Image (cartoon, rainbow, N blue to C red):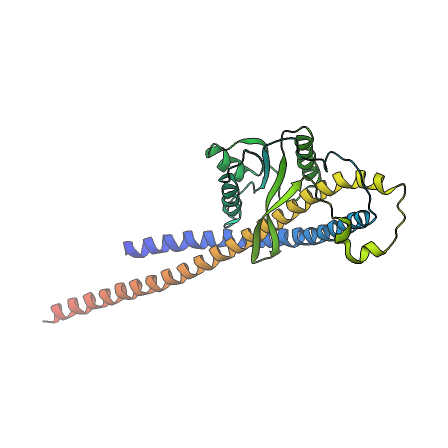
Length: 286
């Protein structure tokens, strides 16, 4: 009987865990739908912005801008996008591993980190974390992306960083989340010959192509950071949903095994009791 009590306690504990992981899966799925829509909409905006830059490049516009100037700094700045919470499968581990690979390259490197998980992991390793954003929330906030982008541009213009790269998770589909490294600064604009058919079309820019380009370059940097944040948040929710679904399935499998074990033990216990009763009756009869 004590064995049956132990099994029952384990079954109750696993059932409680399964309910929790199932609830977390449903919450992550609801957040994923919204984050996926935002990420897809952000890609449309970024594509249009790139199209305008291509048209400006096709016009042969030449403009001097600090974001286009040769780098003055010698150190590289990496901006890593992680999460505040765990229970998201390999989401955080993939970014930490990708950052570790970049850190092994023989180049002086500084770090900006979004998310508590990455900040804790990088500081534990003694890596040069210069700025962290903690408590970033469950949604991609454009104010946060602008703050990160503005600080990265400030470091580049002041010569604190000679190159800025983003390390984030690109959301391709729910089951395909790809860690990426993307150069943010210096901004690389398409050459006039890269515009294809756009080069054969004449456009009128108001107030001027130079004025538009000066305005669009910082906007392009902020948009790139915001898109990386959108992709990162969608990937986080997808990874957490998948991890919780897997945990729920594993709990169900373990619960089924315990039920079978419980039934076997119970049947054995009942059979033993019957044998003892029959044996006692036979002893009295004899």
